[in-house]
Image (cartoon, rainbow, N blue to C red; front, top):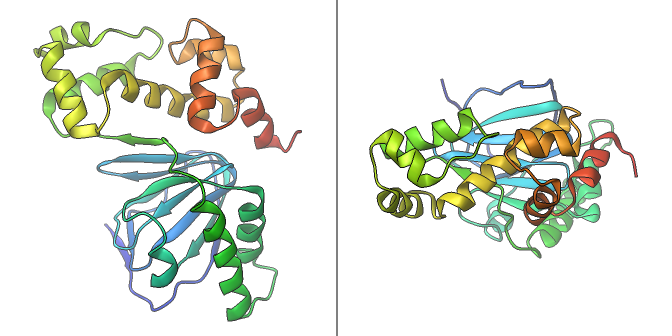
Amino acid sequence: MTETRHDGFDPELSLLLGHDERTPTQTHTQGHLVYPATGVLSVVTRHGSWIAPSNRVIWVPGGFEHAHRAHGHTDMRVIFLDASLAALLPAHSAVLVMTPLAREAMLAATDADRRHTVESLTRLREVIIDDVVAAPEQPLHLPVPEDDRLLAVTRLVQADLTHPATLAELGRRVGASERTLNRLFRAETGMGFVHWRTQLRVHHALLLLAAGRSVTETALACGWLNPSAFIDAFTALVGQTPGRYQRSLTGAP
């Protein structure tokens, strides 16, 4: 069942979630930013998922049906935006960079022990928006296709990341040509198969690293034979190396 919020202005929110804990599917009238102060957080929809470690924040527009899923013990922080601030953000859900300044403003705005005036909360929201809109969207969205053949391919890939098959091999298993599958991948996900699979592997790597697996173990589990290639791909998408990301989850320098 979907929960819908219709109130005029939603409060800021701080919520502790256990590993693999999920919220009910919900829709809010206001757009909001969702940030994992600790842990890793996914926003999940029937069209795909957006994932954020603690140096990223997820933007969810108003009216967007979604649920949250925690990976590791997660301190989820949420701020809701009025129409004037929401208009500065994309019309679609997106993963954005969380700068140190925006992080501190987010933590302050969602601190249940602090007393805020309407004016002080407005200033904190403006600081956050000023920073997160300055950087481009981050490629941490994993779309879910609708075509039955593509769904079959994605399930095969997800079932065994350690032994990556070519699209031609996967096509033979689902009864479609490599050319057809490539065309469908671009039409339905906006990216080629190799790009989509890299996104999936990095999503999975975020979760394994959060669970305490080593960088080498994670690379092998996600289908990279060369840890250096894994580090390069991970850094390009997440904005920091796997080791630095893992240390950031525990507060280590």
